[in-house]
Length: 186
Image (cartoon, rainbow, N blue to C red; front, top):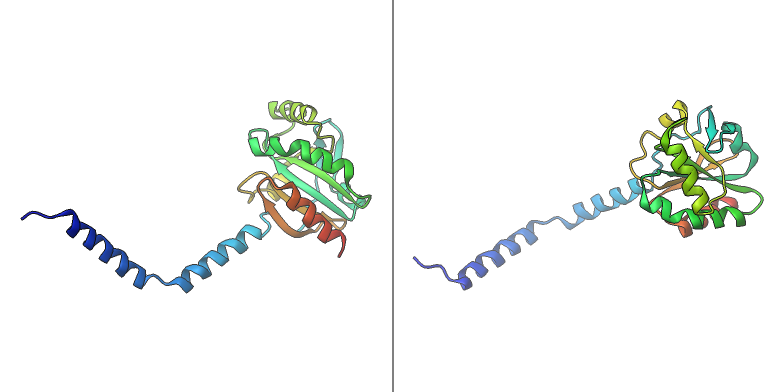
């Protein structure tokens, strides 16, 4: 028995038609909506923990740094991450042009005190003219970030240490600025 290309094509098209008839668009649309919502949910705790850490410059810093401004843009990044490094010049420019009631702070997720990543972070910040505070996380900040699955992830913290607004996953400086503007105007 010889099967022709035409017969194979008919069987394939029939299979596609049967699959399409049984495909539940509403269920898949609902699933896509849920995925979209979870992408907007914050991957960190609702409040910044009490912490004592150091900046990439070796200065001591605590959670009180967030009390200084109405909104702090927190950019969680890694020295291994090309998109994180690529957005640093824009973040540096953003930091220089922020309104008085806002600030930007970086959290270097792959660095620990005295690690080679601290030196690499310093080099990246200098090379990209990203002159804003970057924190080397202590154990409390590492726990705070434990559910961050991708970097850069940018969150927003108010002066009470509460995570507000929506998290932005991926390099999107325009998105950071838009979310910051919304939060400052509330």
